[in-house]
Image (cartoon, rainbow, N blue to C red; front, side, top):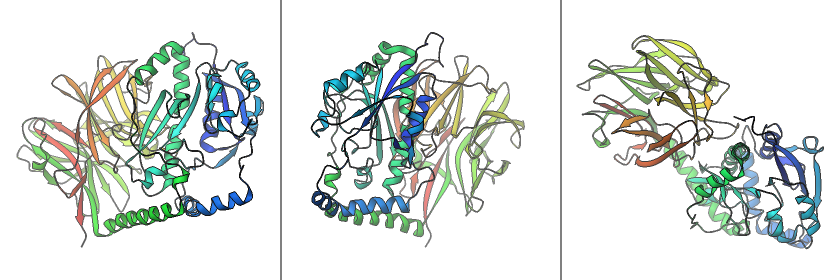
Length: 558
C-alpha cells in the first residue's frame, strides 16, 4: 500500500535497442507507467548497427551455427504458446512523449558506448534507477549514472552472453531448474548485488516454452522492487538488499554462450534431446500414471511412508490432495476426485474407521469447472471448505450445512485471480491466507507463493503482505497440505516440482509471521524413494491417528 508520506515518484530511465520491444518488456514498461510509485523520465536508445561483421563473416557465422538457428525456428513453430513473451510490440506511442537520448558507440566496444558528454546528459536527469533492456554488457562510468544504479535482468545461465538464447542451456544440460535474477550491475560481470531471484522448473521439451515462462514471470520483479524502494526509502531498502547478499554466491557450472552451440554440438544435443522426448513418450504408452491415496493409522503423525496402505481409485480417475477431518471415532478424507473423460475434478470424501476400513468416495461439491485441493478449516463450530477454483478465476468458500455430506456455496474470498492451493490459518488474532498466484498470463502457477491477511475469515478484504510473493521458488512455494503445529512450531508443507509436477515435498518452519515480515526455513524433505512405482507425492495431512498422503503410481499397461 502506498502511504501519504511518499509524494515524489521514483524517476526511472530505460536503456533499449529499439522501440520495437518483445511483449514482456512492453508490458513491463506499461506497468511502470501506470504505477503510483514510478515515472519513466528518460529513454536511451542504442543507435549502433546490430551487424558489424562483413558479408563474408556473416555467411560463415550463420553456416557455423546453422543447426542452432534451425532448432530455434523449429522449436518456436512446434511449441507455440498462447501468450508469447517475445511477440514484437511497437512502443513508440507509449514512449514518444518521454525525453530521449540516442547513443552511438565510440569504438564499437561494449565498454565504450557512452562518452563523457552522454553520461553527463544522463546524470542531468537525476534518475533514481536506470533499467537495462538493451545495449548488451555495460562497463565504466555509466554504471554510476543513476542514484540506485543500473538494474538488469539475467534469465538463465546464458543471458549474459549476447546472442545466446537465455534459458537454452538448462534444457541442453538437462538441468531441473531455471533461475531468473534481477540485479544491480557492477564492474564485475555477474558480480552485482542481487535484488530478486526466482527459480522455475525447466521445461525439458522446449527451449521456447522454458524461456516464455521465465520471462513472463520476471515481468513483475522490477515493479515489485521499485515499489518497495519507493515505500521504505533507499536506506532501508539497501539494508535489506545487503542482508540478502550477505553470503557469497558460488557458480560451479561451466559458462556457455552461443559460441558453444556449433553444428557438431547441436547435432549431439538434438540426438540426446529427441531421445529423451522419445523415452518420455514411450513411458506414457507403456505405463499409466495414476494419483492415489496412501494412509497410515498410527499414533499421531506417521512419518514412515513405506508402511502406508494404498487406496487405489477406479480406472479412468484419480484421487489427490487429501485433507483429513476426525469426527468422534470416524475419519473423513476429503479429496480431489478427478474424472479423465470429463477432464475435470470434483470434491468427494471417503469415510474410514480406526481399523483402516474405508468406503467408496461420495461426491459433495461438483461444478462445471475443475475443483481440487479441498482445504478445510473449523471456525466457530462450523466447517468451511476452500477448494482450488482457478478454472473460475476465484477463491471460493463453502460452508458445511450437514457434515460431511451437505455443503453450501457461501461467497468468493477473491475474484478475477488465478490462484491455486489456498491455505488459511488463524495466528495471533489474524487470518492468514497463503496461495500461489499467476500474475502474468504465460507464467507458471508452481513458482510464487503470496500471503494475505484479514481480521475475518469470511471477507473480501484480504490485505496483501508487503513482502509478496513470500516465496518465488518452484522447489518450495506451492502448498502441499495444511500448515500444522508440531511441538510448538508452525510447519508449512510445500511442493517441490523441480523434477516434475508434484515430485516431492519440503517441510518449512515458519519463523516470523506478522503484517510486515515473513520468514521460513526448510527443515526436511519428502520424496518418493520408498517405492519404485511411486514417481511423485505432493500432499500430506493428518488428524488424530490418521496420516494421509497422495502418490502418483506408475502402472504397466501391458
